[in-house]
Length: 278
Image 1: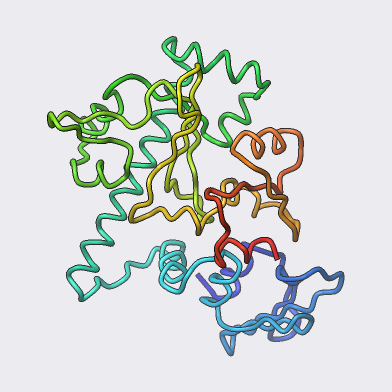
Image 2: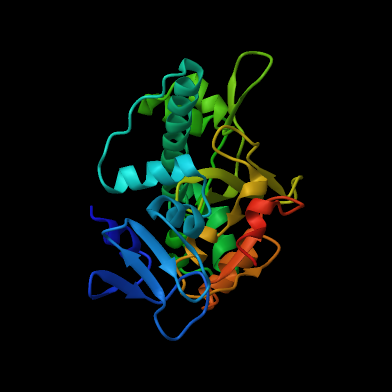
């Protein structure tokens, strides 16, 4: 993967002499002032002054840290990164990778469950809210079953208790039984800016309390560092985000054509989340 291709996934670049030029993704402009130099391995915007190498570009445009940017570029280039020397760090990274897989499987499991006869109460709710099938698929909206249906499915898939419990999707009671955190709820997968499922929100469909249950923070999820719907909104060619209250607000507006919309996952916005609304 050449240098300019790393940028090309985010904008249209055209060659002019030895460099490539395009409209800067970091500010509004009508004439291309964003330059990529393959020889120097850097980018520079003559309009807003942004500049750096491909790693700093990915960090800025994706809103991620240095390590995450390197990992993202390595994945796209199909390059295996060297193993961390620190054993504790290695174990943490391995656990994170497993939790991502647990979450990915769970999102698909819940989404498929929404279309089964057992999900009639959820089907009636989404019909009442007039959500289209395209919307359900775009946000992978699903339905959680009873008692330990997810835990049983995860174990059958080969996942171990450590990553299952770390995900926060399953709890272990005083009797040693494994019970799903979410039962009989409409499920909303929460994704990071890279589109990886990092957490879930579950809405009750009867008069039970609480109305919403959300994933606890863990090795892959920090509510103050993420925004619901950002992975979808960032694909829209707009420089501003509309912040609303909750999951259904985002989804309803998105279905009506307002796609640059997100919702906070906590009561306060951290510096990390505020960078997306400046």
